[in-house]
Structure formats: C-alpha cells, structure tokens
Image 1: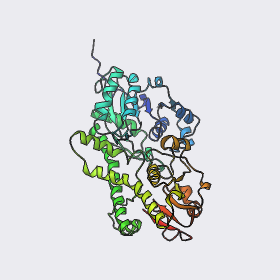
Image 2 (image 1 turned 90 degrees about the vertical axis):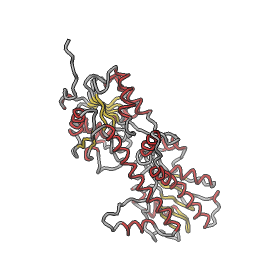
Image 3 (image 1 turned 180 degrees about the vertical axis):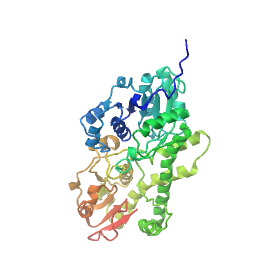
Image 4 (image 1 turned 60 degrees about the horizontal axis):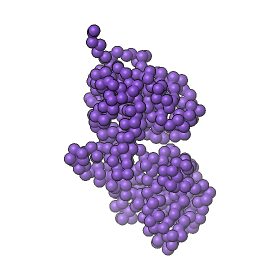
Amino acid sequence: MALVVFSSKMRTLEQEKIAVIGLGYVGLPVAISFGRKLPTVGFDIRQRRVDELKKGHDDTLEVTDADLASATKLEMTADPAKLKECTFFIVAVPTPIDHNNRPDLTPMIRASETIGPHVKKGDVVVYESTVYPGVTEDICGPILDAKSGLKNGVDYWLGYSPERINPGDKEHTFEKILKVVSGQTPEVCDRVAKVYGSVVIAGVHKATSIKVAEAAKVIENTQRDLNIALMNELALIFDRMDIRTQDVLEAAGTKWNFLKFTPGLVGGHCIGVDPYYLTTKAEELGYLPEVILAGRRINNSIAPFIAQKCVKMLTQLDVPLRKAKVGILGLTFKENVPDLRNSKIPDIIAELRQYGIEAMVHDPMGDPHEAFEEYKVEITPLEKLQNLDAVIFAVSHAQYLADIDANVYARVRDGGVVIDVKSVLKPGSAPRGIRHWSL
C-alpha cells in the first residue's frame, strides 16, 4: 500500500469551507467577511445568540443588519455537527482572566474539544484569541489530537492569526487591518495567508512562527497599556500640582514625535487583560516583569482615585457623604459600544460605597439585565438623575455629548461637582458655580 502524505497545498481556495468558532465581537465580523465569498459556518455555543443573528440583527452593534444580509454564504448554527464538512477552522473565542488576574483558557480548551472530532486529514485550525506564546501548539494542539485521533503537524496543521478588532471602530474593520498570519510550516503559512488574503484587502504579514505571532499580539496591547499607565501616573502627579493634565498634553503634543496617549480608565477585553497573559508566562519562566505589572497597578488604581476625588470635593462642600446624591454617566468599558466586559465603572461604585455613597448609574447602551447579572448594578433612567451633588461623567457616549448642558450640567445642583473622567468638557463651561474637575 502506498503511503499517502497529506500536504497543505492539496486544497485550492475554492475547495476551502470555513468554520468560525465564536460569533462575538471578533468572530462575527470574520464570519461575515468570509461568508460573502466562501462557504462558511459560523458556530457559537449560545443558541440565543445564533437565533438573534439569524433574525438579521447584532445586539453588540459591531456589524449592521446590512452586513449580516450580505453574507449569503454564511450558515450560523449552535450545532457542532455542522462543522464536519469544514476544512479551515478559525477559533475566535474570548480569553479572559480570573479573579486573581491569571489567564483563563477555558474557552480555548472548550472550543478545541468541540471542533476536534470534526478535524480531518488535510485541515487547518487557526486560533485568533489572545494568548501567551505556546498556547496554540502546546495546549490546543494536544487537545485536537486527542479528540480527532490525528497528529498535528502530520495529518492536519495549526496556525495563529491575532485578532485586531476594535469594538465600535467603524474605520479599522477586519477587512481593512493588515493581518498577521503564521503556520507550523512555510506551506501552512502560505495557505493561511491565501485564505485570509482572499478577504482582507489590507494584506497579510507572514510571521516566522506561531509563537512569534502569539507574542506580537500580546505585546500590542501591553504597549498601549504601558503608555496609558504613564499618562495616568502623570495625571496623578499633575493633580497634586493643580495643573490640568489635558492642557499639558495639548502643549506637549505640538512636538512632532510626542505620542498622543491620554489618561483614563483601562477596561474591556483587551488592554486591561492581555498583559496578564504575558506576565503569567514570564513568571512561570522565573522572570518578574516589573515594568508591565507596574503599569497594570497604576491603571487599576485610577477608578478608586476618581471615586476618592469625588469624595474629597463633596467633603469640601460640606456635603454629608451618606446623604450625598451622586450620579455616574456611563457603565460600558468605552464610548459608543454596549460592551460591559471588564468595565472599571463598578470599581468606582465599589469605592464610593466604602464612604457610604450609593451612586445612581445611567448608560444608554449597556444592557440592564447584563449589568445586574455581571456587576449587581441597576441602570437608572436618565430622568431620575436630578439635583445631584455630583456627577461622574465616566463614559463619553455620543448621546451625552449631543447636549452637554442637558445631559451633564443640568443633572447637578447649583454649586455641585462634575468629575470629567475623559476630559471632554471645556474648562469654564460649567454653569451656576458648578465645580469641574478632569483627570
């Protein structure tokens, strides 16, 4: 009997059938892009999510109804049996951290266990989820081997292509962002590049190995985290000097090579999470990453600092703290998205509670059920935020910015306090003697 050697070159682009595992903020745009051109299965374990998307609407607002309708070759399902005909698997599931800031690879493991039985000889499995170098080959590969009865690198191949989706960003979309790709061999990398290159008009960059691609992803957000940490530390210093940080940054920003980062809350599923994947692996290897962890400590301290600043300003106004009426505008992790994951606003709420203050919270985009389930926070109607002693303007949603006077200043009593976390309010614009402070 002749020995058959399966080559990654055996399939043309037209012979590929794509599977996208996970239809969240990352996976859905990927599935739609491929579903416009190639037969594609979009799989998610949440039947409710699949049903909603089949009705033609995405409640994360990451894609439009028209986008969904345009993916005529996309079949969405919660049935793993639908994966059996696929040849090119893309895993786009979350990679969160636990309460001890340790990587939680459970979604990656579960996804690998789900698709493993459907991986066949000649297939390629590409991971997009943020991980530390080695996860794809050292953790996911053995799971796929066990579930498929095959051997990765021999019967089927692994690849890694880091996701770069920015929730709410309608300019830097999946198809318009240069795609980093990698594979176990140069041939596999070529195949991965060919598949992604068929839909990503910005082009692809071939990393020299899977581990290099994994490392590139994890340092992208680590770099941003550290730059924001520097701005936050400067804000803490300038506050003690009674200098407005935004004024300093505008002046410094006139220099051609000054990097224009700003202070603020660092939440969400990327910047506030990804560095821990790198630091955990570094610690396992016996190295303590001091700079990265210092940046994380600074950024995690900003929410309590904002709450404490509010308390100090209320105290200066002789407001009894337990009777103080405080409202918080915004709960999602960033402006103009409904994403509540890893929001730092609950940290502000928790710190205020330490002083006996029960803040009311409004958000025009966050889901009230999710807010209560995740954080035990009730979203209050905007009209109930009246005659407040202080407003913490935490998330600069477009709805708030459309009418600052009505949505922010009108909520505060004469002589009250406005805490401007994003520094979007103009100095001196506060009416009726309202005290305005910005980070």
